[in-house]
Image (cartoon, rainbow, N blue to C red):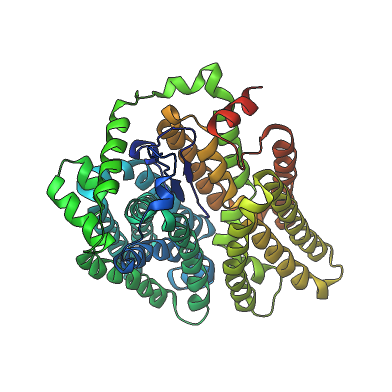
Length: 488
């Protein structure tokens, strides 16, 4: 699953940490106006970025772990079912229960990161993932498999929040956007790596490879400072200044940035706390509907079913070596994701989502057509080619737009005072949809392989129509302009 959030501060609005208590924040831009009407961002000294880069490298080991967990089930399905004699229902539960653990991790991640710190939360997540992978490795039946899977799911649910927020909090303003994009890239890289390695080693061996990023993370955290913003928030003023100085370099002047952070936190404390019922007020309901609807369309387009069980899908289509399709799937994700990040601020949100959804429709329709031809005994030599072409078109189109853009839209359409609670609701809907799709995929494929992909293609068509009719363009607009567009 591709996840991305972005926060903006426009026209004097200030986004606080509480507004970020939801998974996967991608970018946060804070602009402070000086007395001479120049932005502080223009005057900021980058200082020494060596420690910032080290912190980022350590943190994105958690993002890589996220991708490794998501990509694990695709290349291992047939081997695990054969070795442990699992039914389709048992393996579907194993594959999908990851999302339940992640849902729990995402819900609790903000509180955990505030209570034990960003580094503490990452350490805890790594320990959950290590325990989960060892449970999978030593499994002799479905129970220990499921326990291990839900533990890794919980770990990546916390990672999904704490990694990008840690990077956003330690990076200088002029580097924040570029460094936080590494989070998404490393998730995709981890997933692709699991696909590739899983094609050549056993499923137990692949489980052990999941330990590697956790070990790197635990060791690396011993050499990097805690988030200065968190230290300031909990009142550790001395440690706050030491950490900030360490990040910016021993000769850098951090007085101005330290003052900004203190003002930032004071404004955060002054914000009113929104409640769930506030989301149903007339001035907010349209934004909430748009955010929830985009997550429903993102998930029910089938990405987690197709991604979790790609290898078995290729085998069902009669591909002589399902590994070929799996490797192609893995290789295509990374460059397409990078292209999508470049296009997002160039082409706009709406066009990218509509083009992406059109591509997922085409990919699903081709895959569905291939299974229909197989069922009718027609053009059998074309069935594997159409299937792999359909799946690759689907994942390429999804990666370029529908994977990331709905998260960006979500972060832009909610007013600042409801961002936290609205974001939590939308994240819950997203993970719930991910579970539903990943759990039902194998059952739907048993019912009708062609019908499954045609259902997904139908959701893609609905996505295009919904975006065209109801979703505003948010590129280059202030919060006030976006709200006016939604409520007009």
